[in-house]
Length: 422
Image 1 (cartoon, one colour):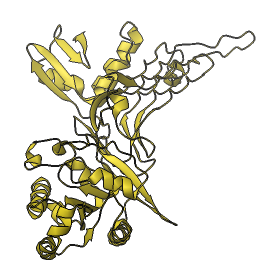
Image 2 (cartoon, rainbow, N blue to C red):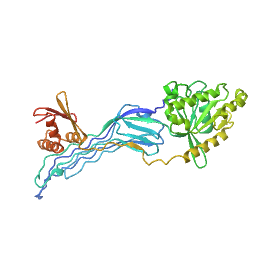
Image 3 (tube, helix red, strand yellow):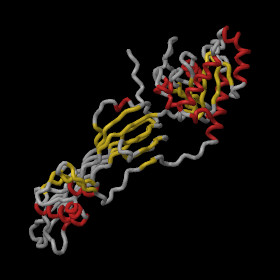
Image 4 (spheres, helix red, strand yellow):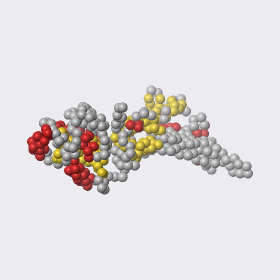
């Protein structure tokens, strides 16, 4: 049975729930002389949120290509009854997921359990006619439709968060070493690119744990997209310590270390300064024992801690675990405190700004506030149309259209609604 592919990047379409509409209603009760408008407001639509959960491994749940839409609000009722608000839709993703929108209005790094960001806001509910009653306008027959929710395309990209990232060329024994140190049970075979997705493991101590990630084998040119490792280089960026595993039985082992170091540097120069421990593996192999003295001399000049191990027999594993524990502790102690939230860009606030453009004889009016007014207007209701016109006058849209050349009979498009200008 084929293994399930590890999914660490997807694009999804999200949409906030539509707001419920307000209604036109009048209070009519026997023996109540002063009835009046009592139409309630519609409920707000639900938001779409992306939430980080440590129990989620990857993004495979979002491969279906559907639109993730929050629940809409319900319509208002008589007796000033407001419609119910739509429920939010929470989409759960792995900790370490970056969230971004194509319009650049949303970008967030979800680095801890429970981190979340709103990616599509629900539409506001429309006002009922009770909201339009005044001392001079006691029987308004106008209500507003619910506002559509935001819709956008969002990119989700996972970069694993682990204390230790295990790196090295294919067949260096990374997966076997991970299994020897942790409770992980990766599938292992003696051929290139055995590991087709990152494997995760946990080393347990009395009072803490260390998370480890086995990054699939890199090859020369990985930073340019060669081999399989290029798909997973990004997962190294959020590890505190690198465990570089090299096959000690190979004559060109020193050169192999240099190959991986160069690929890391070319992908992200900051990785060159990341704490790194060298694990010379397969020391149960006679060839590795024979090369040991010369190899140690080559490694001495690198200035890195070195552990000689055999993932197969367990030789040196205990010492390596202690080295990793100490290195991770030192890396954590030097890290700055993380902020509570890591939403780097927030959705732009809604304001009254708008723009008028003439495109192939049609006057296009764009701007969030004016688009909202058009979307909430009942154009088959004369009172609602009159309110719409007064609102455009107040916002300055009418004057702007006139200045742009709009005349009676001109076609005006607002939020996809084509109108004949009067």
